[in-house]
Image (cartoon, rainbow, N blue to C red; front, side, top):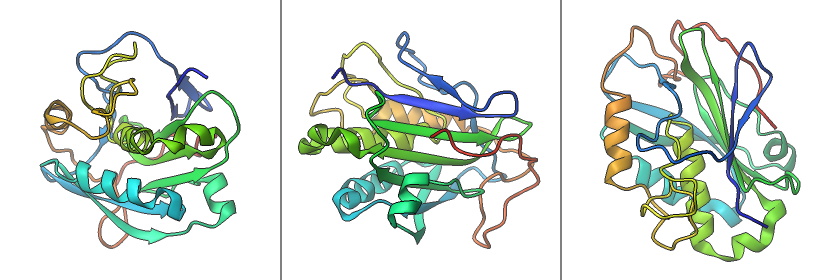
Length: 221
């Protein structure tokens, strides 16, 4: 099977829009989508809904992306029951990371977001598809997909979609050097989050979110 990554946006006008591989983008941003925040950096809460088989890759990805000066990722709750992982339900103001057998549908990993009326991300999920178990025999492939799907939830796109490597998990290759974010990814996050907003669309330490009005509902399964 040809490796394919798929990511989806959930909004008011569509139930789900699946974005498949197109041309490589020098500025690897997912449109203008980003989390709204009133500070120059923010702490994004993550719900751990992965089994022990994915825990190492999950922990690595959170640690590596937290090296960004714009965000930190913190696991604040966990639920890895089979039903929870299969539905991978979004949580307002947070990211949920899941693994389950989602079927042989052409994607190894799927990132989904909801946005508000201002185009700010309000919640997101990153799914790892256990139906393609042969791919996960390669630990580099596991790290690549986990790192990439989490990166999409920040608003990052692919650095390449033609199979070439840019030595980042945000490319579309199977290179062993494409398992982690690189300096260009962090520079892109600096650009995406180079301003502050008038409210927070992510959950604060109290578990509440700011004044953004939800535009979409539900994940793209």
